[in-house]
Length: 314
Image (tube, rainbow, N blue to C red; front, side, top):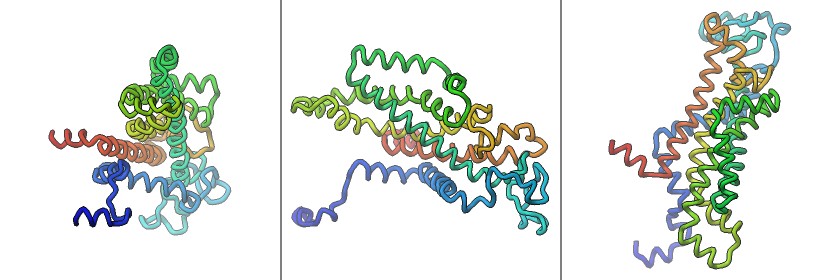
């Protein structure tokens, strides 16, 4: 194909080498990223179609509906369970609620926790870090010293302290997790802004008379997004774990909410007598966290190909 043919070809025929397309191509060449994306896609589908998948209301006790007992073992007809007995794939919990339905609906809550808390943390951290890095001086000192104070506390203990002040409940747990994650994103964005604002294209934009907010939000922040995306993906996994731990302690989601940490906390005493009540929600947490970790690792390698080259050299 000659240069003349290339110029004559319509724009759609010219292969685009945009950063987004290159990143996506590199991303899906990573086996761990493909695995993480498949698992995450499966979880999202389960969350969307939970009412169609779950055979029972996750908060409904079946004691007055079926001849069942509390903490009834799983009953699967294909595995030899009597046909005259109602099928419960993961058994019944201590309130005679269908465990499978609760695990399915728990996917909704956990994904909502992960995306909402890290979304809030990214927005707050990006604004604080961008302002601190671009303004500098006393503004930078005030914002970043506040972030340093928050980072000085163990994140989980700080979340417990915040919930103690705000009160128990899922909503307050979301706020607590978002607050303890904000400093990480603020420091990351500040470091990126400090590096990018000294580059030539920013100086040229400034010389053309562009305002400081326009330079910051239209020229600098778009170039600071790649590390933020990677950190956010990995942060979702941590937020889901933190929310499950808070609910396990009775500080997050409250009964009768179908949240995996709450389910673990309620049935933790049955680990030897009814292990299925602990195994399934625990496996669901592990499965979800694994998906985000795999996807985050793939994003990191895709956005910085040097990392994958170093790993291959080893």
